[in-house]
Length: 174
Image (tube, rainbow, N blue to C red; front, side, top):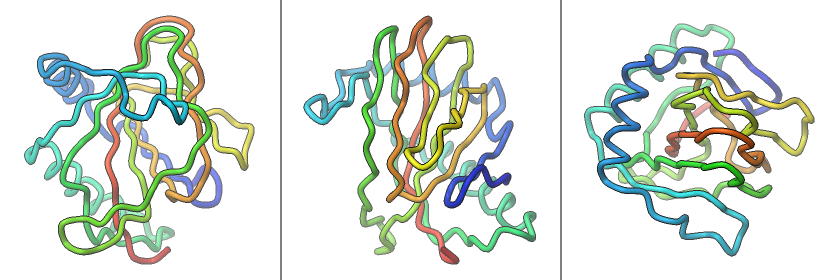
């Protein structure tokens, strides 16, 4: 895990290209619907995946990344029980916001968000944090973990279709 800024970490190649394609295909088969929070600046489509196999894989990878990184003081306490898959077509974006804490099944309150980019054959769609002007460019399989209190946004997709997954994490050591 590579720190990008205070409270934001990046994991290159967190998902394989094949895993990304499987998630996209499952999400497309379920069918995307317009985002529920359009009034708050969310202009995209979404579908919720209750994929215990994928979530189990994510949890094991996170545990491995966190334990292999001696500089990282985070310990995974719980992972959300569903994946939100978002699709951003040309012209779609998400306005600056911070993520809400959610009570997870274990009773822990989430304090981090994990997003993973499922494709990178797009133009635009970078993630920006209000504290930094440095863009996080979508890269196939890359995961970004960040404190939920940090304001962030997804820039407008200029060409192509952007796919990401998102879930909540509860971690000790923050």
